Amino acid sequence: MDREQFEGYAVARNGVALFDLSSGTKLALNGSDCSKYLDGLVSFSIESMRNGQATNTLVLRDDGTLVAIVWLLKDDESFLILTDPEKRDHLLSWLVDHRTGFDVDIQDKTDLLACLSIVGPKAQELARSLAGDDIIGLPYLGFEQNNDMDCLVCRVGYTGEYEYRFIFSKDRLDAMRETIMKKGSDHAVAEYGTSLMDVLMLEMKSINQIRDIADGVTPLQAGLHWAIDFRKDSFSGREAVINEKSALERKLLLLVLSNGAPPAVEAGLFIGDEKVGHVVNHHFSPTLAKSIALASIRESVAWVGVEFDVETEGGGRTRAKAYSSPLFLTKTVTEAVL
View 1 (cartoon, rainbow, N blue to C red):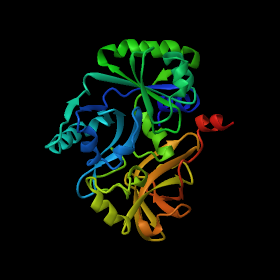
View 2: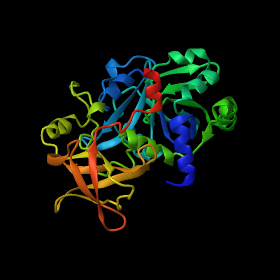
View 3: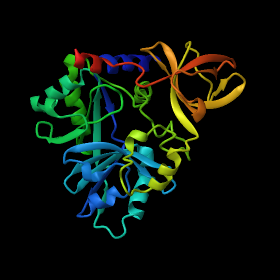
View 4: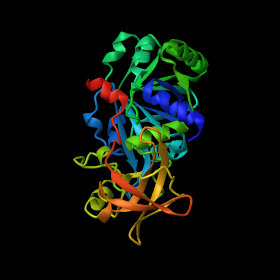
C-alpha cells in the first residue's frame, strides 16, 4: 500500500472519500416479461423484490459457475443491472442469448451513464447536503430518483461504511464531481482510485469477483451462499448448486497474518508439511496493522480459528489464523449504534 492509498484509506474509514465508478457496466432492461425473464437467470427471487429495491445477486451458468455478481435495481417492470466493467461483454451476451421468447429489451447504458460514489462514516451527512434531508430515509438496498441532484441515488456497497452512488448522464460528470467536492469541502472529501476499494472490501470479506474468483470457482466455494435463494424452484445453475451443497470441496476464508510480512503470490497454506490451500488475494490492513488475506482452503480444515503456515514473499513462512467477517466494526457501524 503506497502513501496515497494510506491517505485514502484514512479518509474512507474516518471521513468521506469519492470514487468514480463510471466505467462499471450498466444494463437497462425493459418489457412486460422482465421479471419472469430475470427470475429464471438470477439466484435471488425477483418476485420478492419491491419497487425501489436493490439486491446483490448472482448470474450463473448451467454448471453452477459464475457469470457475474450483479446489483439489480427494480422499478416496476424495468431493471438496472450494475456490475464490474470486466463483466460487460460476457454478461450482455449471456442475457441476449437467453432472451428468446421473452418481451424484454436490453440496452447497454455503460457509455451513456456515469456513476460517482461517496464512501465513509461522513457520507450520509454529505448525501444530505447534496440530495436534501429526505435522503436520510433512504434505506440500505434502496434507490430513488432525486430531484435535488437530478440523478438516481442508490444506497448499496461493500465496505461496511455508508455508501451512496449517484447515477446520471455522463455528459454531466465533471459538473457533478465539482458539486460533490464543493458540498463536501466541510467534510474534507477527497477522490481516490478504485484500487483502494479492494482493501476496504477485503476487510469486510466482500468478494471482488475479478480478483477473488478464478475460472471454475463456484459461488458456494466463494462463500456466496447468502446471495442464493435456495427456496427458488428454478434458476440457471440451481441443480449444480444444490448438488454441490452437500459435497463442498473448498472454501474461501479470511486470514490475518501474525506479522506484517505479505504473503507470496498464490502463497501456499500448510498445516504441518501438508499443503491445504493457497492465497487468492491479500492486502495490508491499516486498521489492524497486519497483512490480511483471502485464501482458498480444503473444506475439511476451512474453519474459523484454525491456524496455518503461509509462504511469504521472502521465501519463509509466517503464521496466519482464520477469522470470521467483518474483521472489525467500522466507524459507520459503531457510531450508528451509540
